[in-house]
Amino acid sequence: MKSSENMSKNDVLRVKLEVLKREHRDLDEAIAALQEKSAPDQLTLRRLKKQKLSLKDRIAALDDELTPDIIA
Image 1 (tube, rainbow, N blue to C red):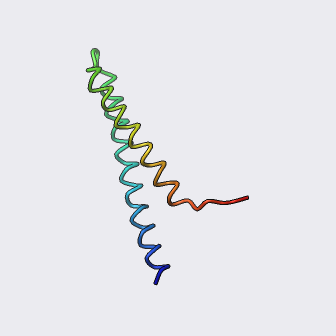
Image 2 (cartoon, rainbow, N blue to C red):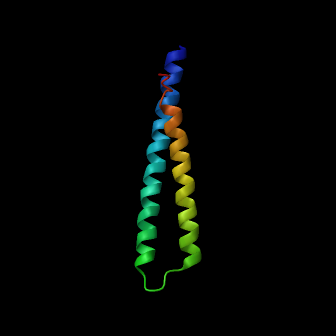
């Protein structure tokens, strides 16, 4: 039973990871589109970049949680 609970948790984590990666890509596209403007809103740009960085940290944390530690 414990094994199936772990699988279920890992499956949920994988789905969350994919959602975060998609959000990260979307933010990347939004930032690129904003930067193409002749006079981009610097405050919005800064906010989007901060949000993107936060997502990157959450993605890394989930990735670490899903990847077992290998002690060499």
